[in-house]
Length: 234
Length: 234
DNA sequence: GACTATTTGTTCGTATGTATC
DNA sequence: CGATACATACGAACAAATAGT
Image (cartoon, rainbow over all chains, first blue to last red):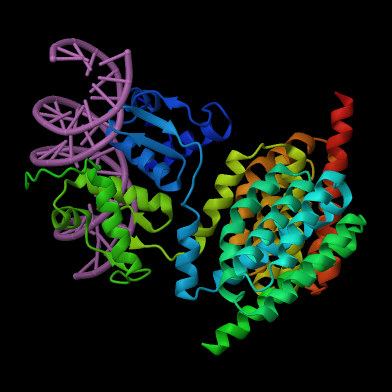
């Protein structure tokens, strides 16, 4: 019925997975919503239950769906740990993709820093100062440094007024914090990190876009250099 | 099978997926390696072929496996999809506000353009020229413009030598191409777009990082302006 | 190019475990 | 508790694509 007419060689289950994903993206199926039974869905897409199950399993692997035995199929409200493992794996494997990730983080945050300097409110300044204070008083205590740094960058993303970017950074932040944890043990590195955040903070408060972007780039460069130093030392 | 009374009611396919993943992570199955046939694997794990297929589909969703029709099952190198997933999810969850999306796209592509100008090979230059040619000869035919523009930016991302960024851009382009389609109907806009891509192309070929970054920003600014013009016209 | 063996893709019928009301 | 709705699991069969001869 539905299968003929085209010479596509693409497997059905990939097609169906894309269509389901598209429905979620377009918001026709909302987060947390319960989907129709698999049998109904299979009929709706014109495929067998087995194929539909494969498609759903794919989306479960992607962290978009959740199948509850005896209950139903749900659009997963939030994908929690799905992000962490691949990054850990890459770090363990010494993959060069860690470099790519850091680079992407830098590009995004350069834009965020610039936008934050342009659009920040007084409220954001207060939050940034608080995070900076945590870092400055926390030299010697890695957990405080990490917390302060995390709050700082999350606030920065928020101040940029770009929810999409804020979402991406919030998720990218986890692996990045892993990097900082990895090389932040020495107090010397901590002082460098804090100093650059102080400069970044001042740039944003003074609404100096270029300076903010520049200081952020310096921070990322610092991290990259310290990483390569560490690598050679192994 | 063994009728053991486990208190764990965990679905079989999840169990099998974990076991397979464990084998990959532990290195018993190497990246790029071809796995035994699904039927053999099913027998090995003591499950039906359908269940094993579900497990594999999950791992395909996670970006760990690749199933090739008529050929076999392969362990997919981590590089590509693994890092794309978090951003993918972020984009899905975040509000797909056009302005925010365009902004993120611009920040990322500024970095990409700069890196591409620094690292591009002759091969990339050839591909860029080809895409540009498609656009230049396609003025008046929107579908050609869209295809050329898509190829151009994908090539650019590839030339940047950052697969993570390339994947992110590919995802972002889904909604972004809609924007261009929306406002690309007029030939005047098409000419502007093509002209800026010509400038961008030349910058990359000449390995002028700053010019590349600048021209890309100009392109994004152009799109933003045209969008707001359109909005007012409604 | 054609043939063949191998392997994934797809369907259906049926049975069972589990959550919800 | 029972009834119902649903995901889970099995097995057999056939279709389609690929690789090798």
